[in-house]
Length: 92
Image (cartoon, rainbow, N blue to C red):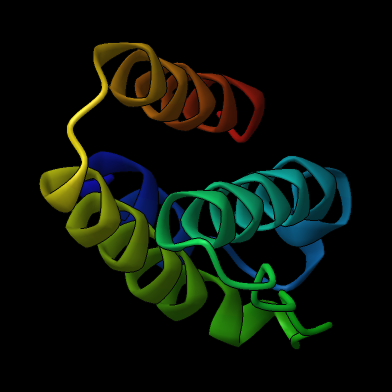
């Protein structure tokens, strides 16, 4: 998560044009999994300006890690790891 957030924080506004979609998908996936793990409706990942997306990744990423710590499931942990790796690759 740290490497992805550092990368996203370094992007110019024009660089976001081709990189917003993978981050949006990541946020939606994180929100959905957090909702499932906490047995609540999935939090809505709001449509944010690009400068706020790295902070949203930190917040939703933290939420899902807390939820995973309460109900550790290696399959879900592997899924989150894959989502972060894919987002990192697609924003490079």
